[in-house]
Picture 1 (spheres, helix red, strand yellow):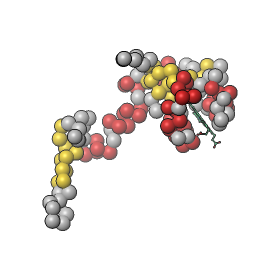
Picture 2 (cartoon, protein in one colour):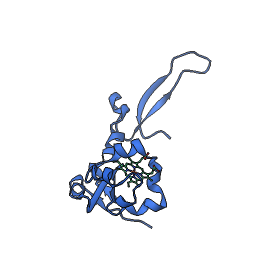
Picture 3 (cartoon, rainbow, N blue to C red):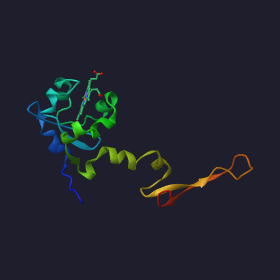
Picture 4 (tube, rainbow, N blue to C red):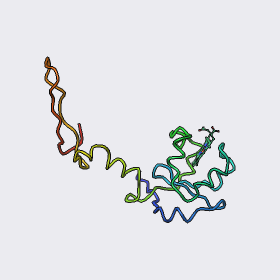
Amino acid sequence: MATTTTTYTVAEVSAHNTTTDLWTIISDSVYNVTEFQKRHPGGAKILETVAGKDATKKFRSIHNPNILGAEQFKDLKIGELKDEEKPEKEKKKFGLGSLFGKKEGQGWRGWCGKRGEKGGGQWELRDGERS
Ligand code: HEM
């Protein structure tokens, strides 16, 4: 069954920046942690520092990212950032490959030298992800 995801802009999230209305962004997802503040093992104060902002970096430096999928935290997620405002997606799109002219939808194809031969090999960009 198709489920619709509510999407927000960064500007919309930034309006929820007080202790009585506290949203934060982690990995392109939007969390309402207003009620969770009291339960947060790391305390309420620290969540205040990221109220209405992107907390991805701080969150990742402390937690195992998998905890957000845990049953007791599932309800905290209220939606996702709009596609064009997702910084995590942008990172993937403009990864190291883009330095070599890699475009979205292209993949590296090639080989590392012929069997029995030392060195050699050739890599090139082709349309279509690696199969
Ligand atoms: C939905 C959002 C969040 C959830 C569900 C969450 C959950 C947790 C949990 C379960 C712990 C206990 C340790 C662990 O199991 O990792 C914890 C600790 C902590 N969290 Fe969060 N957290 C969230 C957001 C944040 C953010 C945004 C920050 C920082 C800006 C933060 C800072 C901390 C700190 C400082 C600790 C204490 C670490 C320690 O004592 O070693 N948390 N959090």
